[in-house]
Image 1 (cartoon, rainbow, N blue to C red):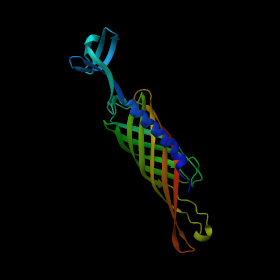
Image 2: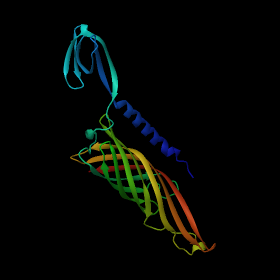
Image 3: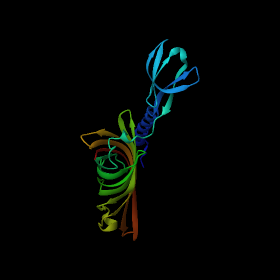
Image 4: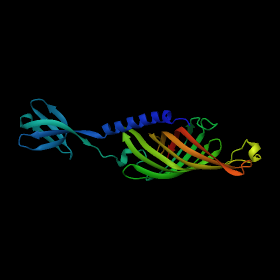
Length: 257
């Protein structure tokens, strides 16, 4: 079986960069002015004349002006911003949103089709903390056509104007077709019964704004999927089982509305 590390490395690197940027962008600089009388005010210095005075806009949006001779110390500190704001998503006005996307599953592990076509659609409920939960259905063209039914969990976050999300899809893929068994000597040409199997697809995505309430998404992930086929062996007078594993990189373009 081929190793999955070549597929996972670029995804892990991409996720690491996004998470690192999230930590840095999730902090805000606060100016701290300490007066000689002991009072401390925090906010943003909007104007400062060295040796004369400074003007400070405090966190409660009040404006203060202090003579420099009354100030004991000026420093700054960083504070964490809220992890999620309701207006940080392009889909901010929607509690429920639909994501219809198409793409490919790149790879050649155990399948004649090196880039199966993938069409998926999910309905998701968005919570105020940036988490969304939903479910969906798809259509994919492996060696046999399959229909995946899956749950869709996402965490949305805005990084310096860029709407990103982490996702994980998992479920079961049902095969619509059986596979031709070329070993006629042992099974009299009967087809192999395709049972399908479960799948998991974690990854990361970006959302771009469109017109009105419609947006577009680009997702990159790693698909791990199994497949089970059974047939009756006339030679051994027994039931045979073939188990397959697919390790692929998923790339999807989507429309959110």
